[in-house]
Image (cartoon, rainbow over all chains, first blue to last red; front, side):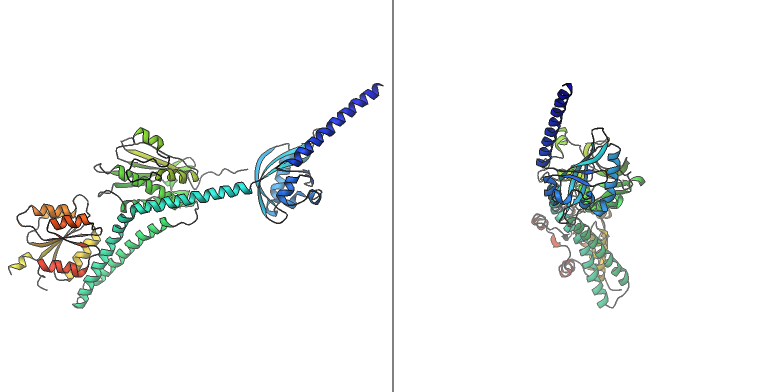
Length: 384
Length: 126
């Protein structure tokens, strides 16, 4: 009898297990995330409805086939690594990769992978929970597009503020060219040739001067796709400085000093966007120093760990405390004509570079704006 | 011979290329020219026998208008042509009030030389 009782208990336990398994199966089947299991040889053993929706294969089509069916060939190595790690009992949480739909479409997915153990605790397979990132990626892409658009519009707005100053700057070489040409015509019609060659050389120099100003402007107006790549920091800073000087609001442009340390020579940046930040900071500085005698502006690039720290220091009156706290919010301005979006766009740009931007009092009075961008030779942090 | 003493054209512009080219043109047109890189340099030199001035408006420290105004204080005002690449109505009106002419950059050769010819005679050709 004891045996029967015992057997009855066993039956109850078995029934519990069966119920639990059914409940689990129902949960798995109704999950919005794809849930897939495979054995240690990489053969698919379970496949829920969400997996079918995400990857196009029906359970009966894929169960018994290798998991590599849904893994693009260039990611097959990745699968071997995952299996190794799971065999060691490791649990990999949220692993972003790509899978291939039955129709060939590449699906970006976030995977959570864990080992499946038998009753004795031995690892007999792997379960994967996958979330389709297509929509998430699309949202990210749209957000990045909007952000790029905002940055570009703001840059055009910056340019608009500079237009009359830049027109003057381009008019100067044109004036010189006109004068030389008229003088040359008079000389030649009088049969005089002395000094002609030198004057022609000056004409060419002035044409180059005008072209360079226009080229710099055109570069900034350009929409282009945003691209962060190794760039010479000194050139980047000096080009921006030349434009900002051309467009200085004061009759007396501030004396400018640029210092770039050797270990801060190359940054991984979107050159035009960083010049946009520099132009904004330099213009703000020039405006802050409008009533200051002997205004000085210095731009310095220094190494700071894996980053390059760029400081723009002015000798103006400094920032009021309340303004400084809200400085990088949109629509905060101390200027009658400003929209107040300049610095918030600067922050957007710097954060897209993985850097930070801030302002503080300069040691000798005035304000220092600092921002960081990645150095080209920063140590790599591989991501899993 | 009496007029020959007043044949020098003084030009004042802070942009070295514009200054050099203007000097080149006026010399090619037969004038004797004194060139200055700033209003201060001109005032310091205070050259005698200047027939007329060609002055740039946008200069640091002292603008063209300020220089012309300063010269008005003298017993005899020197005829002046104010040049600028951004001639606003305000600037033109102030110049007119001071008895000065105005001309936009880049300079129209005929307008420039007409002004100069009104006040200076070409140097004897060499």
